[in-house]
Length: 325
Image (cartoon, rainbow, N blue to C red):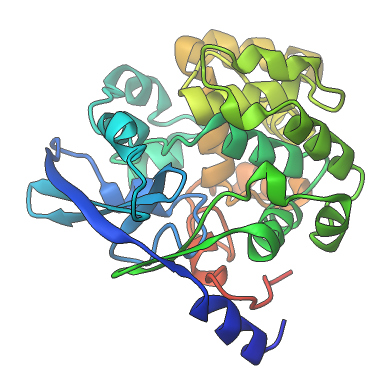
């Protein structure tokens, strides 16, 4: 898509109107910036503000002001769904989540100790089941760059552009906007069949009380299911264990690979899913060989390479610019 096409797309963006605003007290030690920038596209975080979907045609913009988090909600004219969802914003950014017992375990750990040390105010930023399962499917048998490039292209091709005073926001692509042609152009490959089946089953209507039904979809295995529950439901008891994490955990803890999952469960208990996520952040989701080299050198702090989970937002603006490979 050339510059002219980008300009045309932006010109037809739907302008949202301010619908509501409120404040959240920022707990001591909490970091909206760390929470907002991890695994975010450029329309979700820009270095100063965090944007998140509230519901169809509605976006919340969050920014810090001293000990307060200001929240402004913008909505499509006539759209009132935000009224039923606005109270979930605090839960979605984990502002009241106490991770004290997790960090007590995580400090000094060879996998997650770097994140515990450098980003103690980080919380998971959750999303809808539909958004989470799209992320999970794109990560199947893919590197960080491959998976998130797929998802980025999919948004550029199929998302509605929503204009706020703080910039454009690209909605999670609606199932009705997806087709095999669009998914091929986004380079999803074999994953397109899974996504189309998820769309046919109206997964966008699911919430955490009904998310288990995605297990009936061909192409949703234990890893994708666990990652979906982790991202959508803050279910830290689920462990998205893939080959990458299995080999890192086996190396870190000196156990056979087939015992890696059990070892993570034994060490982190109810927090094992969060530990899995933090491992990807600490090692910048690097390819396995480089991640293992870093582990052996004790380099488990994020930010050693780019793009990475903490810097993805810098490389993915809401325009059709290429994602670095």
